[in-house]
Image 1 (cartoon, rainbow, N blue to C red):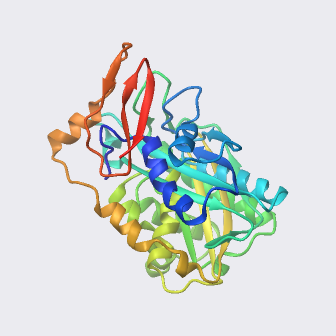
Image 2: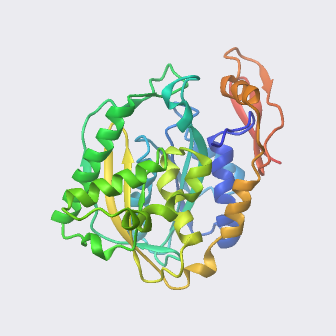
Length: 346
């Protein structure tokens, strides 16, 4: 699993993920930045404002932070689609950035992780064109939560798995009732992955719910290639379903014209199922080598070092506090001064 360095957080991860998009496409058409996270660093200021500054985006930009557990990035994607439909000339930068953290020696500790995914949403997509309809599902359940006074999340593992599977059923039911496509019309499925076996479990559950025969090879074909990055990164909350998409596109044979299903789940709980068509020429726009390099650039740490990083935190008292320089990425959190977070490019 990935563990953030002392000078990394959701801002540095988000800026690192988004910088290649800005370098490739420019920023003139980006009118909105949506940052989805459940690892927020401030109760008032959006983490996206820091990212906006680090990337040098135009001042004529709206920036907002979204929260609904692991579902938040999908909400951001759907909001972005609405903005682009209203004004096809503009683009929206959607970023999912999270640090999954549980108490030491707790059952959830093994499912930690950290990552960010950035997506540029526009009227002429280069990878996937999102389709209508969407299937939606919400129910109030306490399967996972993090009160304001805690730095680590609380989770009821069995309750969470049950809530997830209930949400799979509910979102698919609504999708089908709104005229969605049949299971046979999808080439692959990207599920939220709090741990990678959950994608397999969720797809088996969906097949069973739809009265389909369940064969191991069919499940593997549907979800197996989507788990490659999450398997080594760990749980990345809002980013995980879109890490699944990146892994699928980076590994699969030509998917041009194929339909991919997305099941986004956020504890508490909200879920959405929708489809997207892989567009022609997408392989020329992939960043496979860069994605692999980003994963490979991590440095292994020993157990003592991991526990030290897990417990590392800024002092609550006012003053100037610096961070050790540890990151291998292009941006770092250099410290705080007067309770103000300080970021810089490396």
